[in-house]
Each structure stands twice: as C-alpha cells, then as structure tokens.
Amino acid sequence: MTHWIIAPIILPALLAPFIVLAARYHIGIQRVFSVVGVLALITIAAGLAWNTSDGSILLYQLSDWAAPFGIVLVGDRLSTLMVLLTAVLALFVLLYAIGSGWDDRGRHFHALFQFQLMGIMGAFLTGDLFNLFVFFEVLLIASYGLMIHAGGNARLRAGVQYVLFNLIGSTLFLFALGSIYAETGTLNMADLANRVQLIGPKETTGIRVASVLLLLVFAIKAALVPLHFWLPSSYAEAPAPVAALFAIMTKVGAYAIIRVYTMIFHPGLEVTSGLFDLWLLPAALVSLAIGMTGVLAARSLDRLVAYSIIGSMGMVMVAISLFNPAGIAAALYYIVHSTLAGATLFLISDLVRTGRGNLDLIPQPAMAGTALTAGLFFAGAIAMSGLPPLSGFLGKLLVLEAAYATNLMVWIWAIVLGSSLVSILGFARAGSVLFWKSHSVELGEELPERTAPAMLSYVAVGGLVTLLALHTVFAGQVHKYTTTMAVQLFAPEPYIATVVETPGKLSKPKEDH
Image (cartoon, rainbow, N blue to C red; front, top):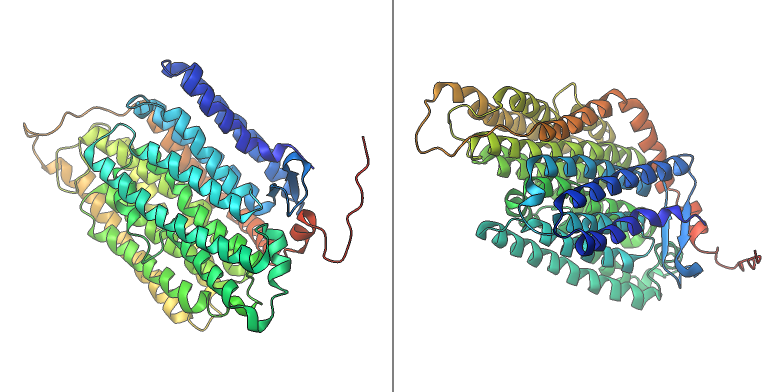
C-alpha cells in the first residue's frame, strides 16, 4: 500500500485552512504557498502517473481498513492521468490569477482554489461511489465560492443557478446510491462490480433504475443536453481564472461515466442494454450541434467560449457513447485537448476584456496589446474548432475513425463535420470583429479605459498554448497510451482484485512488522 496516492487530496486540504488562518491578510504569502503547493501537486501527480504507466494499480486503505468496509483510494492509468492534467492546468490558471490580480479582487481566493483542487483530486482517486458523492459536494461548495469571487449581481445570479442545478444532481445521486445499496449492500466500486453480476435477469429493475439515475447525474456534471442549461451563464459570469479551472470540472462527469460504466455496469450486462446507443449517443450529438451553433450565435466572447465547452463535451460524449476501446481512447485524447483549449480561451477572453474594456462582439477601436492577444486567440480558436495542425483536428479524426464501423456512422460524421464548420465560422466572426474591424473604428469618448494585460498573464496563456502544441507533437505517443488505458478499463479484473478479495477466497493474514 502506497501513501503517496492520498497526497493530492491531503496537500490542498492542509494548505487551504493554513492560508485562511495564517495568511488571511497577506496576499503575497498566499500566492507563494499556493504556487508552491501546486508545484508539489504536479510533482506528486507525475510520480503517480509514472508508477501506473506499466498497468500497476495503486491502493490506499484509510486507517488500514480493507474494502468494502473501509474507504479506499485507487490509482490506475486513467485516474492518475486526470490528476496530472488537473495539477498542470491549476498551475497556469493560478499564474494567470496572480498576474491579472484576480486573486486580490475578493477574499479567500487561494483557500477556495485549494479546496477546489482537493475535491477534483478526490473525485478522480476515490474507489467508492459514496465518497465520489462527497467529493462532488466539496467541488460544489468551493466552486460556488470561486464563482461569486469579486461579487456582482450578475455573478451572484449565475452562481445561484449553478448551485440549484447541481443540487438537483446531488439529490438524484443520493437516490441512486440508496437504490444501489438496497440492491447490493455495498457502494465500493470494485465490490459492486462483483455483486452486480450476481443479480438475476428477473431482479434487475432496481439496479437498472440506479444505473439510469447515475447516468443522469454524470450528464448534469458533463453539461450534456438537455441538462446543460446551467453552464453558459455560470461559466460566462465567473471570473476568467475560475472559468478556466472549471474546464476540468465537466470532465469529472465524463470520467465518472467511463469509470462506472466500464467497471460496474459494463456493456455485457442486461442492465445497460440500450443505455448508450439509444440515449447517450443522440444526446451527445445534439449537445455537439447546439454547442457549436451557440458559438456562431453568441453576442459576447465569454458566451462564445462557454458554448464551445458544451460542444467539446458533446464531442467527448460521442466518443464515449461508442463504448468500445477505440472510442474510449479517442475520448481520453480529446478530454486532454478540450480541457487545455477551453481553459486557454477563457483566459484569452479576459485578456480581451482587459485590453478592450468589454467582451461584446461588436466593432470597437483596437484594444491594448492587440497583436499578442490576437495571436493567442488565433491559436485557441484553431484548437477548439478542430482545424489542423493542432490537437483538436487529430482528436476529431480519432473520433470519426472510432465511429466508422458503427451503424450510425453517417449521422456521426455528418454532425461532427457540420458542427466543425459552424464553429469555424463562429470563431472567424469573433476574431474578425475583435481584431480586424477594430482598425476601421474611431476612438469614442464613452468607451471604457483600456489597459495592457500583465506579462505574467501572457506567460500563463502562452504556457497552455505550448501544452496544446506538445499534445499535437506527441499525439502518437499519447494516443498509444490512451489506447492501453482503454484496454485496461475494459478488463477491470486487476483493479477489482487489487481492491477486494476474489469471491470465494480468504485473504491472507498480514504479517506484523
């Protein structure tokens, strides 16, 4: 049993109260401890990812209580990849928040930021459905505090809407957990995988209801149509660094679907028959179409980016709904891409707000720092819309290739390619209004004051663009790794055997040390 696996949860959990109690009135000290903590998280996450890269399963049993009675944390290729992605994203978001001064516009930003990281890391590492619910609630509380950071009526209204929708998801989650526990007597995911298979064909009603409820919960977290209404306002009104960090939160829903429905409710069970091809795939295709249509119709840059997140999640869910190793591998590659691209665009929108004074997509005089901001926007738009040469293009090719052998190949290809064209038009329109037409507009007296963004802000956004470029350069190696990851997910026996004893076998007594 390794103790390192709990570090990504414990470290931010300890840093947050320390920042509140010992450095509440010293923003410089808060920044130092927050950055050092995130750097430590990256180091730990990289070590965990390296240890699981050969297929090893890492297990941590809190208080040395064995599953299914104790709380367990489990690390495999998928969970450690998501932990590493979160830690790396957090560093650049934090640098931007410091450079732009967003962290000093309200109270407790850094403490809430650490609690947010704690919730995300816990959701990726937990091996228990109830603790997944607990970490979802930690995410909800911390994200609400971050969303209303710096105040404002519009931000408060969006935050209330965000909380209400997620409370509905939490209620459904509790109903699902109650149904599962009533049917199986356990909530440990590995133990559930064994017990669900023992349920007879005539006794699947309760567990089928639970599986549908879980899918609804995770679809809310992933902002899948028709459960996406909370996202555009919430993400658009949130402070830019917060919205950039939230780019990983929709991926928590995608991660939960992959984890639960490859291990517990895998495709071979009667419980899941029709769940993906009859429900999830159409919803994913509609999400993709609506998201990219919103990109074209948006009247402000922050709304445009928010709708692009919905569209990118639709693309991820299209790949997941294929529910084969090729589809899951493509989805995992695209998850990394869309997280980085979404965060990049949210931060770029704040660069535009700083240099222009607003985000309205109407011609206005040139903003401060136009050239550098325009170059970064051009790179981010190419990435999100899926144009070559960046990783969005390769990710969409992988999704199309995975869908080639399916019966709905024509529909999938048509909607993916059509939505890509629409998104290209939407981003081209926005870029033209923001950067090209601005040179033909005379400076007015009523316009807000324009200031050039800080250099550290540009460094943070440039770092994310560099990661997108690296994700493209090493696409072959990354896809090979996600393919081995998908194969491991569809063969969960080693995971289950690591967490719980094989049914019918007694565990060996532990030796005293």
